[in-house]
Length: 448
Ligand code: NDP
Image (cartoon, rainbow, N blue to C red; front, top):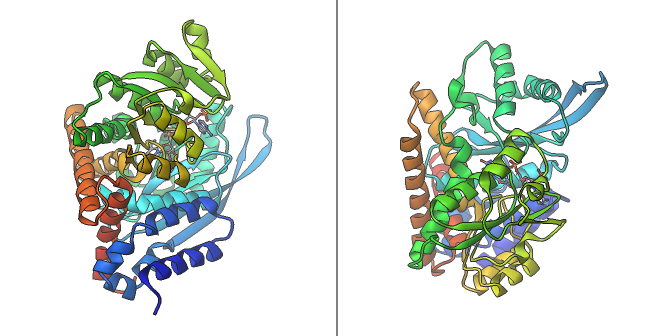
């Protein structure tokens, strides 16, 4: 009779052999199922019903061709993806990523993570993710529109407010959601607001959605520090990226009295010791769509480090908000040596497994993405609530709901980690709470 640990190792080996080459998906699965040994020991029926094996297999995966014309009239072809991972708790829910690095394995890893993140919110949403290997960089508005229309011309038949509700992610913001929704509306002859989230507030979007992931990550960080009887006031912070998540994380950190000294993009790092000037970052990135390098030409006391490693900059709080595997073991050791006390993942899986181990060994408060960045999808679910009731909430009301949800996620993770013998380990806490929520629903539905 194999031990529980051996059974979990066998499940992992099968995931690797059934999904060859999808290393990020393997990494995400490993990180979750490593937390589950004490759960299966306490609830053996999860193993008997093969819940872990079922949770690791997506319910459906769609791959499609996306042909479009560029501005020169040349035909271009990209690949579109949509993975519906788990619908035990609600319709598939998760963003669309447009980035040249996107492969099926990328989307599967993100959709798998989304299963646990969405369950953590306590709201009725299942998990999915999608996207394309299309590169939005340097594309005109008209090209973006033609691409989005072609993408939706296939995607529309697989989605719906009760089936699958996509949103934005890297490379997909309010502009792209607008083009996608417009095409969906034309094809289906339905004004189905709840089919996409991340819409503009002027036509059915939630206020705070744009800010929600960054704000939520900071609320989670605040809760982790509070558990250590500390707060954000006066803390020096480093935030990687300068996209949607990073910008609003910086805004909320500053609102809570922290000092943010660095941010970045994929070309380099800005180090501004006297404090990042957020209005400049917002204008450069949200309006002018320029590189972060330009910041240094406007602020003479700021340094630009081409290709630099942002994690070498000393700080007390580090928020990786750019992309997966951007913070490795060496960077984690540097952060610890420089006196870092808290790390919360605004991005999805930005810390490598070795990096996570370094933080946990050092006793640093470490908030994994599925908990720390769940504010985005939670606010998407609030957007769905408003659409379903044809209502529109105020900024203050929505922000208060977000803060409450992030506080609840923190409490659930913290208490569960303690209950299962790993106090302070938010990774185990988050994995166990969310796994149990999905598992219980799956069991209730019979063999699905
Ligand atoms: P954006 O596209 O708005 O911004 C991404 C930022 O990260 C950009 O500044 C980008 O720079 C930078 N970046 C990308 N790749 C690298 C790299 N290899 N090294 C350094 N910087 C890099 O995306 P979001 O802010 O929306 O998303 C960021 C992360 O947060 C992703 O992991 C996403 O999945 C996750 N997330 C996002 C949510 C949301 O609501 N937006 C919700 C939950 C998670 P450049 O412009 O040069 O590419």
